[in-house]
Length: 548
Ligand code: GLC
Ligand code: CA
Image (cartoon, rainbow, N blue to C red; front, side):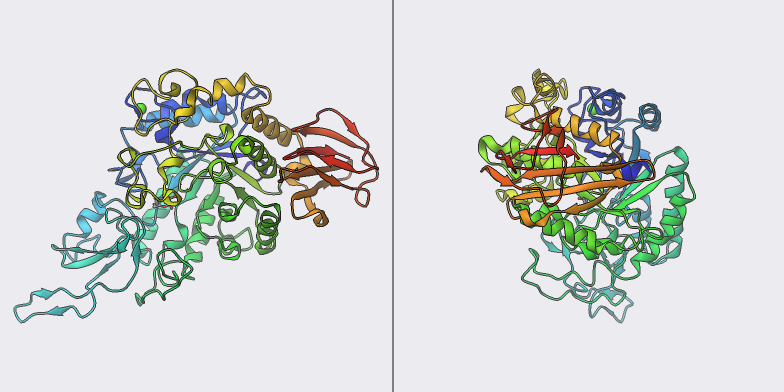
């Protein structure tokens, strides 16, 4: 199955390629760059699918994650014809397309919300989460006297209470991101059916899958209880009443039935947590709920092999039945890992270790655009910030999402070849030395290393689907593991060695392997036959993938 064997590449469409010179990336831009992603040869990256962040009609208060028409494309990104062309051009290159479905909330400009807020008895009155407030009263003249905010639920991007008063309807609506993203009421059956129709609409057009935005927020506590306090969370709340409610799994099951009634489609849900068990619950037994739930645990790990190892094992252990794993180091909501793991001149070497890990673990790898170049986002000033969260939390880098969203660095020409005009976010000032064309010309570049890894994976059954076994005794500085695929005709075993440290490390593999190791890909050796009986000395940050 493509989503299990393949590599998925996330595109933030505003920042990938601008085709019409307005400074903002668009769908035609993506179509122009499909050959970079996969032209069928190892000159290209070789990815099997792209997940494109939202490009639907939107007032862009949260840059597309606030949708005002789920069935139309925002004119900034193009037209439905542009999307269909992208889809067909991608399919010609065996690139699958996953679209981003933001079904927890709409924009406040969505016609449903415009109607819903008019009165308490219109046809969309119950499609959103409305509340009269605590201790609301009706006065003698029938006038409603406003109550207090219903509970302590928190708006993540506004950094204040998530209940917003609407003077016309005289009630509060819920918006736990910005006030411009009112939350839908998934307990309403009509709304549910509408959303299921929407899924069918895009599946009929031919998309290969959905990334489901904040799937674990869809259902809220029916008694609207306040979250308990917690010192562990940045907003000082333990989100037990506004997230991860048990009823959510029913929605995952319904959506699974719909997607599985089409040929080879998939869903991956965003469950933003460091808790592997919680995320894996959304996959059920692997056949009855989401096809995959993102495993974000690497986003929370420091650059330490032992921590990364624990994270991997926890994730594998938490998956039930036939659930399929996945791994990701970077996305559009977090600082890129090239930044998180930066270490001066060693940064690229670290990125190579991370890339090798991502491509050799058992599970689907997700790459975030620009990660193959080691893009970091550069320095942004407050006046450059576009994202409300980045702006409000400046200068705290930790919450800066804009740094992960700067324009793709294509070449050394003006604006890094991304656009003919000044882009919506500044290009990293290092673009002249770090871009696709510079890295393509350098055989040792990170980009060429990603290409080699992806193409090796494409030809390797053990890398795609083999069992995984760790040789734990080498912890903490290195990870050593094997991937093995056994079938009637062959028994292929790969050994992967990753040195996370800046020192040389001696490894004796004799208790695991008897024969020599043939190097398939590595940072310090290639095409060699290594005799390992006397031990093996790994260089600092060495990656070695061998066949035995
Ligand atoms: C998800 C998205 C994020 C967005 C939020 C609200 O977390 O990844 O970018 O702002 O949902 O839709
Ligand atoms: Ca454009």
